[in-house]
Length: 168
Image (tube, rainbow, N blue to C red; front, side):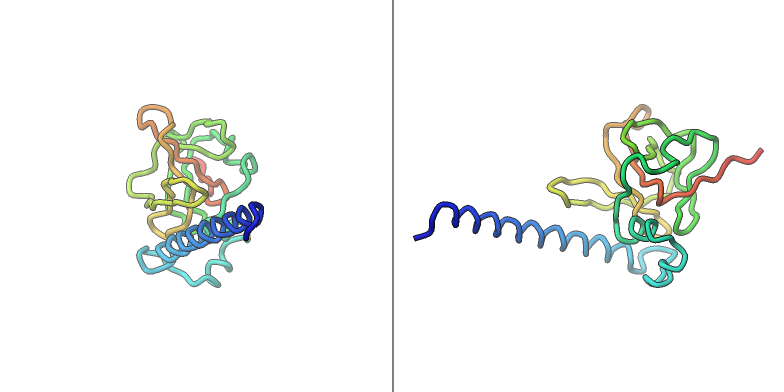
């Protein structure tokens, strides 16, 4: 007869395996969607590694997240455009940037047509993942707790973007 402790351990192990398999299946689905030919710019993993630094590769191509408060772009309020670090596509303008207090660069609206989204059900929650619409690079997530006029908060990984100051 199983003891209570053994039953709890078995239940925890079953739950852990089920969660891990669901999490890994979702990550593979997202990675496949963003690494196939759905985007105008496609490269092999080695080609991406040659043009991105290791942290950019981890975030843009492997759907990682940089640590909060580590990006200099979070506190950048100069006039200009934020572009994809993978392909250079303009993503956000400085006019839509705001201080969300989260430790990541945040915007209330992207440049029209600049992003694509997918559903991310990892970490026991459902979130909307944001990708570059041209190369599929993972940029961050969008939430419905932003300021007017959109009410959205595009919470982006600074390492996934580069800032181009306005000319003049």
